[in-house]
Figure 1 (spheres, rainbow, N blue to C red):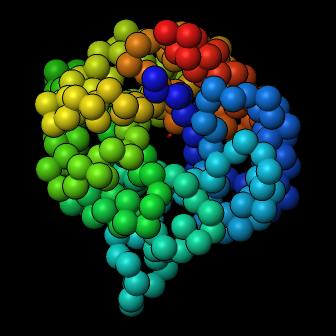
Figure 2 (cartoon, rainbow, N blue to C red):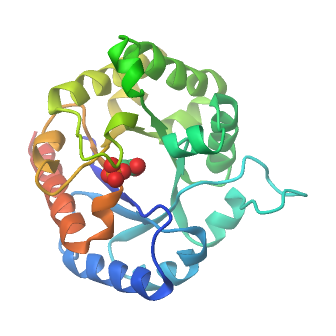
Length: 259
Ligand code: PGA
């Protein structure tokens, strides 16, 4: 049984006070949900405040990025050990914005997964194709290229804890969502590829969908058999919308416990 995950990626948004009120509102709204794992991923500077505020709530803390280095002369970087000390459970790795705007590639992504795993946290590996990849029928090869790099470079133990987020680049922040069928096709591909490595890992692998998930489309996406929740950008900044998305995942999680 795969428990769905809903993770809110706050990106570069918020002040200390808006971050605090957002997390408190979310915590209130999801208080009675027990069949979904919910996390918020604020900017680094808000981690300490948010860590305190989610104490004794069902929320988990995540970070949006991490250095691939453990320590040393790397000005401006934040290490996995530091994130772990601030109570992070999840770390988003290889988001398409990092890959395109900050030159991250499969090599840095794989190194980050290692360091996050070594510090006992759960990497959320983002994979996804651009619109031109999709239009030139390269979706499958792009996704497999991103996933294969991680499978080839990670110990099985790291793959056991890995979470994958399928985020079609053309759907991120655009209001265009992949249809449930389009998303399911790629999620199934990801699970099948992992299954060639280990059937057991593939069966337990949580594959989240991300890209313009809203309160109005979450339920139909999460109802697909290989979708195990979502990575939410814009809608995670509005407590009402985010809570509604968490409730859609809760309904799926509850249903799965019955099967
Ligand atoms: P979006 O972002 O929900 O705003 O499309 C998703 C993401 O980038 O993780």
